[in-house]
Image 1 (cartoon, helix red, strand yellow):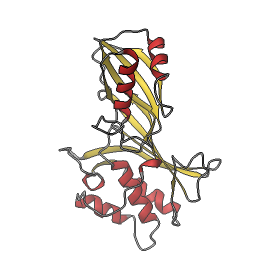
Image 2: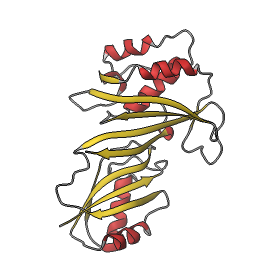
Image 3: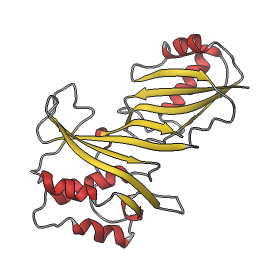
Image 4: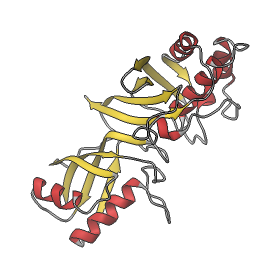
Length: 246
């Protein structure tokens, strides 16, 4: 067997997430089908992050296992030429069989982009248009509440994880004037299903409601109730920006 490490970028709009599923288009099964159609060889792809349906990635890492060998540049070029326009392999290199994209992750960086005015057509697929007025200072306060180690059971969906404790290293908010968007950056080693989107959705909601205080989010956190009714931010605004390894 031969082993490769790849870095992929994709627009997740039309895909049902990263993970292979029967009868629907996902990133990994689209890539596996493409590989088979070119080389007539089986391939197994394991991604570092199981991004949800509609979520984008600029830097997703994956391991590739196959019985087929071709020099890295030739393999990447041939594979890229057979992939749809919304998936591109940014780098591909031979690695040893011990490489596992889940192991030795130092941190993952996600962006969530939203706008308080209608986005430009070029950004519409990647930016949430938030219709309601928001207290930006209050939003920053809300987001900062989630920094550190917490049990995020109330901020996940359909979680099969036995341990719902996670650590968020940092959350920040900036405004990008040339794009007229706000960008929330979330940094941590690992995240639960829908965790970032539920945090962002909840914070936007509280920041748009004068009658609600940021402390309400902590109350929800402490209840450890995944069925709480705060909104889940749409997938379109979320992007896996970077993964770094030890």
